[in-house]
Image 1 (tube, rainbow, N blue to C red):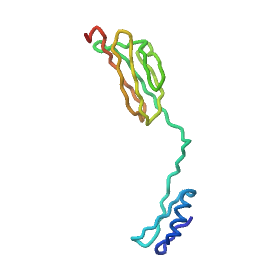
Image 2: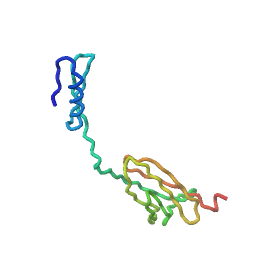
Image 3: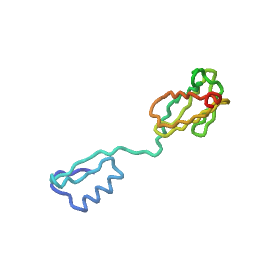
Image 4: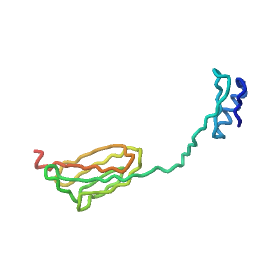
Length: 134
């Protein structure tokens, strides 16, 4: 499809160009105020583009003593995993979508946080001991 530079487009020409725009990566638009036409490149959209994943490092510590809590249950996006001996868990999550993380451990109050990640992040959860919160 070619864009014209001579005068205004007729309605028929404009309809033809708009229909053709779906098949061609250029959309010609009439600039009536200037009496000419211009081409604007459209970006291709693909519904099959895979989502990018990022790494969320979840650290779980005791509030007050800041010691790591090994074996804390971390639930995110339908996945359940336990923290390692350093109180950490590496989770692969989709970038640009909300990630909700719930952390719980025996003898501690559970905690939940949510956010949208666009890059690798580290979240640290400081859990209250049930004996401290009374």
